[in-house]
Image 1 (cartoon, each protein chain N blue to C red):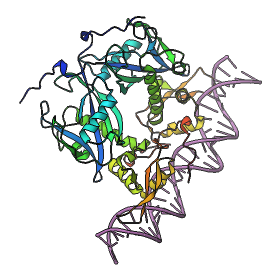
Image 2: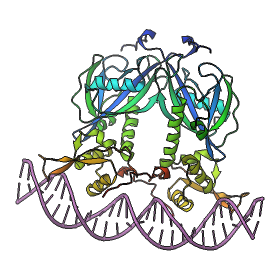
Image 3: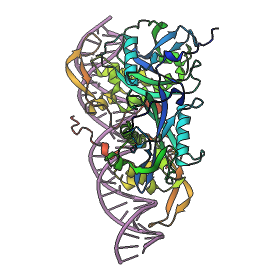
Length: 248
Length: 248
DNA sequence: GGAATAGTGTCTGTAAGACAATATACT
DNA sequence: AGTATATTGTCTTACAGACACTATTCC
């Protein structure tokens, strides 16, 4: 049995692999993402997604989870949805050297304001529509990444029950509906939303509590159920373009 | 304005970035993928997905397209759907060194038998269910990758018009239905399938030809339309598990 | 003739969209 | 009182699933 040969470093192109994480949460009814202000060149003063090198002993998932914990200060036990978005690899995306970045999307309940890391001047939550409206400058190809991430989140809410990831452990159906309104930018019909959510087995499960302290009747509280998928999926109102001419 | 500083190679962990491509096609009503037999350690004699290093002047998309062309011999102009699946980065997935692989999925019409490359003993099409039934050994983590790729293809046929990517330029609705049957492992109702496909604007467009040479009436031929998405999506019969108890 | 496929058609139940009405609790 | 929200309910239309039938061409 031959031993696997070691690679000579000259055999493969020099490259660094990083992870970047789009950490999304809901604050005041709007989708926010965590951005850090760059303190060094290139793109000094611009805002960037939190990220860093993938270390030798971890895979990209672990690196992303580590960045998430470092930047937000949440405990490792906090259940935050984290999924790979895609990998960005344009040769000149970082002017310093070849950097391939594996990008993740995290969905979290409302989180406290972040503490600035050592390598960043500042870190704060930005409303995504403020960012995409060009209110701030994003470093590298992070504008494209953020755009892809938002589209991923929007589509995830169609096919999966991940809207609950934006909410605390228990929530009302009105709060769940508000998640959809925030992410899709349009409110779904109140009654139809209730009917649809309750018709999906395992989307939500009632708990023995009610919401108090807000106007209106005591709202039944729910927690996330075991189901991951919504079949058939929800329809995004803004997507009801449908080509108009369904010529028959 | 400061110049971007160069990185010292000792600042970032040594890693190689490769692409692997799951090239899928339909042969004899079954989904096939292209695999190459490894001629060297590790995994000598096992089968692997075609792949290679991402070169300094190309991004991962270009590298995947290059591998696709090299392995299949198709022209660069041939319209083959190619999309990124995800990135695999377990630290020990390649025993020789740290290798992060960006994996792509390609969907192609029936292609000729491949020519063995210089680095591979042999290359051939394998039916995916033969592979997943453990009929052959797959190198590295390619069994997991193949499984993920097949799931991606199955779900793509629900939400997108990519089934046409498995067919030549013109095709009949019966052939399109056969694509769904091959990928999903179950045939859809003939009449309902016709109705649904024709109801989606831009899924297929009739051309001024008919299919001859097969039993049955002259079948109208179609070509792929401009639409990319199917809204509302098709439902996979095998997914109609739906939790049974939709308690009301 | 037999087999396979294309094309047209019908019936029915369910789900989605639109909208109404009422009750409750905060300010 | 006014306002905001929760909850139950109705009506109508569209679509999905199931199934029937005929016609055409190859073997």
